[in-house]
Length: 323
Ligand code: DGY
Image (cartoon, rainbow, N blue to C red; front, side):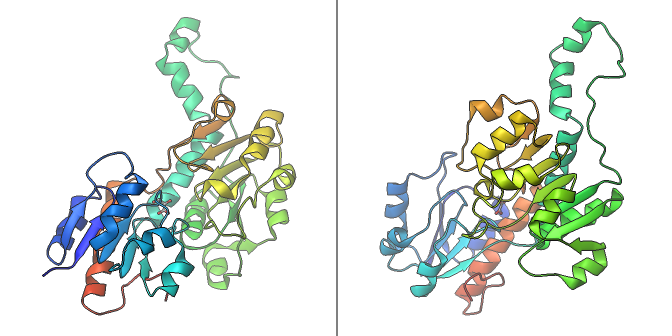
């Protein structure tokens, strides 16, 4: 008999097909998130579980899943999973690094450029017919934004994604600053990046990109004090996790002009709506789509499947988190 895996959302078919050869597969077919009580029911007889970043996987889930041996998170971040509890129970947890690095770094740059050059405002102006209504073909003072080429970028979190953001910054002739828990001498050399304290980085950067995982240490690491250190012409880009930033402080900063703008892909809770934040013109907003390319999502599905199949074959999964 094949072991059983439950997948909490319809991931790309390539991963599901790979899994079908080795597992009895059940997929939650709906677009909406699986209700907690249904998840708790579904895990009762599963050996493996594929989860999304929006599901809290904790002791209660494990209590309901006596056969569960492995959780494969369909994300590189795994702050949704109680790793300590999983480890204590001997349950393996895997994630999906590498395969989404370039897509996510590209998206950081999408937000950075769209915010700096006011793309969304300009799109609305054009699309709504306002341009035509005004009857002015071109104006030297319309939609002025911030220069990017040759400016300074500060990257907070210099893991795979942070470094990929820096690699792109080289093409923009930028000075590259970074902050992370430990220094990365090889990356410093390859990318000509300078290690800075968080305070120095915030003071000196024209663009600050957040690429840290959410941990106890990074929770609200950007609050009122930090936003006040930034230049009033600077732009903040968050592709990490919403809780890394204190939203209240960010709204104040954007309204009162402590910083020039923000590009956000992640929020303190998701899905998110905040009229005060969303009514501001100097923010560009996306619904957590950093890794949303065909290639990245298929790569994530394949890696999830490889992790589970490797585990089933009695070997260590390639991207095990709780070694
Ligand atoms: C992740 O993988 O952690 C991203 O936030 C979503 O792909």
